[in-house]
Amino acid sequence: MSATLTIPQHFPVEFQTNWEHLLQQKPSKLASCVTRVEVNGEKKSFNQLGEKRMRRITGRLTKTEYEEPNTQKRWLSRVPYDVTDIFDEWDQDFLGQIVLPTSETVQAHHFAYNRASDEVIIDAALGTAYTGEDGVDPVPLPLDRIVPVDYVHAGSSVNSGLTIPKLIEIKSLFGKANVDDGEEIFFVHTQQQLDDLLMTTQATSSDYAAVKALVDGTINRFLGMTFIRTELLPLDADSDIRTCFAFVRRGIKFNDSGRQVHMDIRPDLRHALQIRTKALLGAVRMEEGLVAAVLCDESPASTGGE
Image (cartoon, rainbow, N blue to C red; front, top):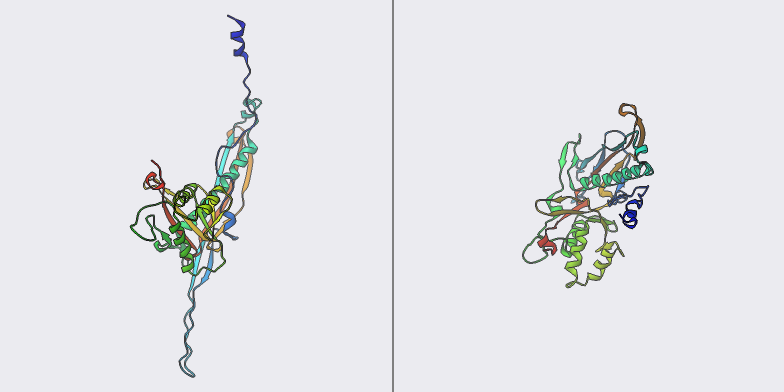
């Protein structure tokens, strides 16, 4: 056999000696936008005082009238989370020139912790809050704080993705709830909702330039709201309806015990190396008027697909 035909069999194959992270959300998108609080114990209650109204005095020396204060409680409960990886005691030897991914594993745990923080905040915004003296009375997000999937400003209702009228309506909900002027409103969405806006404004709206800048990342504000993209928002797999939401900072309280990393040798597993990251996380929606949701259809017919 010719030498020129056998030489390629001996060409070396080079292997990268380090590790790279696959695509994933790495930083937390929401933890910096909520109110952080300290909690000592399993849960913490927050005291709330309701609206008061002055009475008109209609005569001289009339009897003083009073009413009991309208007080409520909201409860924040913390839940433990962790993520663990284990490397056999011989992994380092069998990998040869490839380094054991200990530092990359710790970093991957950090990314998981960041996403867990966002998921806890999302669950608090859209899920059930608890009130009452003992924190057992459920308070779901009411329907009048949810812009329906078929919302239109005028005409026949039809399921749609994110539209300008839906954004105007969700912004209006905060004004009607007497949210203080100047409070920053954060709008949480996925990439699909940006695509929806771009398609609906491209040929018909003067907002196209602003939406294009939003999609390009040149700006992050539109209609007076700060836009935050994350792909962690809940999607109903049966209906292809995504739940997006808006909130103000004081509308969600969030507790984070801090990320703790343990790197231990496990004698019970033949001295394997265990890397474990843990945290206590909790959040609560403080008041329904400080949060609003919008349902967006992501089915192909609604988003312009085939």
